[in-house]
Structure formats: C-alpha cells, structure tokens
Length: 161
Image (cartoon, rainbow, N blue to C red; front, side, top):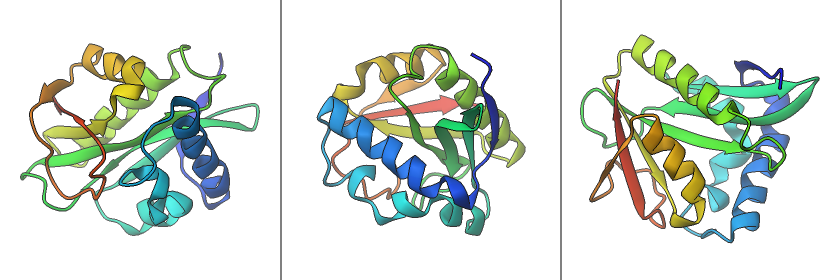
C-alpha cells in the first residue's frame, strides 16, 4: 500500500467522523461515553488546528482517506503527558501496517512537542488494536488518566517516548 501521511484538513472532517463511527458500529463498541458520541468527532480539523500542543495526521491513498491518528494535550494528564487519540482506520485499510505508521508519526510529533509520555484509552472490542499498541511499547495501567470524557473506555495504556 502506498499511503502517505499529511496533517488533517477541513475537508477531512466528514469522512473522518464517518470512519470513526463505522468502526464503533462494526465492533459493537460503546457509543455513549466514547468518541462516537463526542461532538468534537465532527470537527477534528478545528479541534487540532485550534489547540496548541496538538496534531492530527491522516493517511491517504490516491485521494481516498484511510484514517488518522493524533496527539492531544488532554486536560488533567500528568506533566509531560499527552493523549494518543482517535486512531481509526477504514475496514479495508486495517492489517496493512498503516496504524503502526500513524503511531510512529505521532510518537515523533509528540516528542517534538516536548511530551515524554503518551496515554491512550480503548475497549476490549478493539483487541487487535490493543495488541498493536502493546507491540508498539504501550503498557497497560489500572485506571484512567486525565479528563477525556470518554468514561466508557475500560483499557488504559501509557507509552514512554
């Protein structure tokens, strides 16, 4: 696959929101208390463009948006921490290494932004993704950090950069 990464653009908002919500539908993951029902999901360009210390990258191939991943300074996280957020890929894209490429790009960006750790939240329904996170050096922790508002998440991980 010859996908390339670029920063999120306004034109990506609708397609990114569709990809994210499609994943929740596909895996029957909790919709309330998650990114599914978060108003910001429909305005990712604005969210990341207007928040200092954040970034969001999308993967694209031949003009088709495949998914994305970002870094966000979630309120309430310990000093030096940001959250790895909204890593979602279309069904046809998964299993081809794009998620790992997006994560590596976010690790580099987070380091460049001065963060020492990335925190992330997930669900048991996304077991393959959680396995990928662990394979990329993320360690499970026993409780949530920060105030993401995504109270339905039951898996929490931290990656030291």
